[in-house]
Length: 362
Image (cartoon, rainbow, N blue to C red; front, top):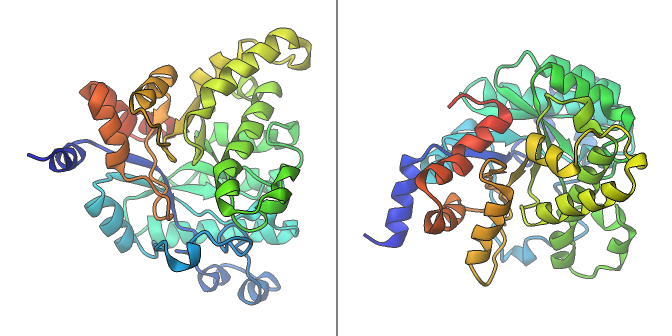
């Protein structure tokens, strides 16, 4: 039997939870408008309110050389994810780029409308799970939306787009949002972005970038490191000890550096993080989970084994980022795991860890 055929058989026999599946282009302005009152309904139909999806600042698809994909119905999710990729539990998120909208009232209305379409179009007709999106411009409204979504059995987490926030996401103004998530037993999922408008977002060095390759390499990393640092230093996990935090679409290789860097800084400047009762690394290992995608491609495959080993299979969860052009096939991570990890460890990363992170009973 070929290695490829053997890998496919392993995937078929393993329960896989995909922590990051996007419906960004699967929800149209027309569908959202059905859930909006005026003047927001007309604005949604007349203005392009998808700042994270258009990519108009860059050419992510390289003039058509890279094929685009789309999930526009539960049937396409079933075909593309469940049947073709052998993913048993795709977690659907409605990426939109809400934090980039300057109109807070519009962002709040779009938040509610987008979640309604997610539930009615993708979740109610199926047994899929989803992540509800929030507009971080208004933490109080976000908390109200989290309370509303808490009654939806198929919503297992809250999707927080980790860009364009000022102040950063550890600020106490967001506590009401985290409190609502903890109360409703919903995991927080942070997700960066690198398309429209990001050239002029944090950090200012973006303005000198000439190629999308540069921005796409760094965007999610910068946003994730800022969010993680802010959360830890401001004591968010200490304030909400029963809340799980996940980071999507930033890979895993940055996490050991951040754990140890934060440990070092905290050991010198403890007075600047007065809420912490443990080391930053302990909080990260206790309450944080990290999605595998983008997996990274070391020249020496042994380095990937070492990276996963440092974090521990209890902290690493599979994610594909489907249907984005740079998505990771589950076989990519599966091959790394199959080379050096036991069947139990492979089972943990591909299914058990993401299920634990989002409270899914396998």
